Length: 155
Image 1 (tube, rainbow, N blue to C red):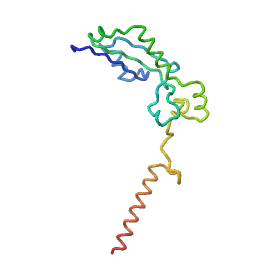
Image 2: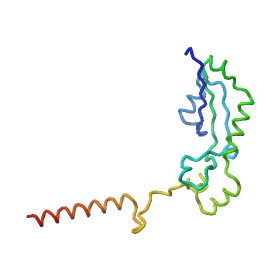
Image 3: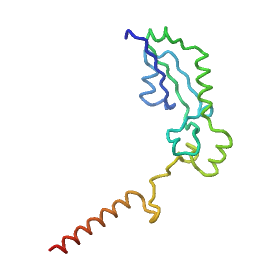
Image 4: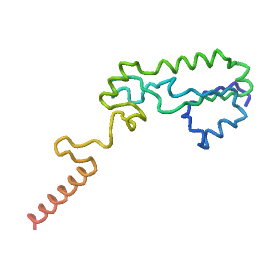
């Protein structure tokens, strides 16, 4: 291309995945580094539903910097960039107090509690403790029965 382009691609450290291999082999790859799962966290995508904004990373994370030739000239990727990026990712790591509280409640400890998080399986209907799909099926049956009773009354 004749424009300066620069992309930072952040992916889980699943080195056997085809996307990982394509990124590693890209002719536009200018910088790559791996951040250990113990060295960083993320701002949770469900943060609006959680008590805590940050969570531990369940995997190592690969950082791929892809640039066109003009992008490489315009935005130099230095060791200082990598250091700043690593420090920024480390800021997303939950505090020790948050980690201890979440461990007590068994929520949001990533691979330590089977993904924890906001929902543990499907939501349950509060009154009957029946799963969502089972409850919907029951409601559909009731609706059909009431329609057939109406038809009997009309006939």
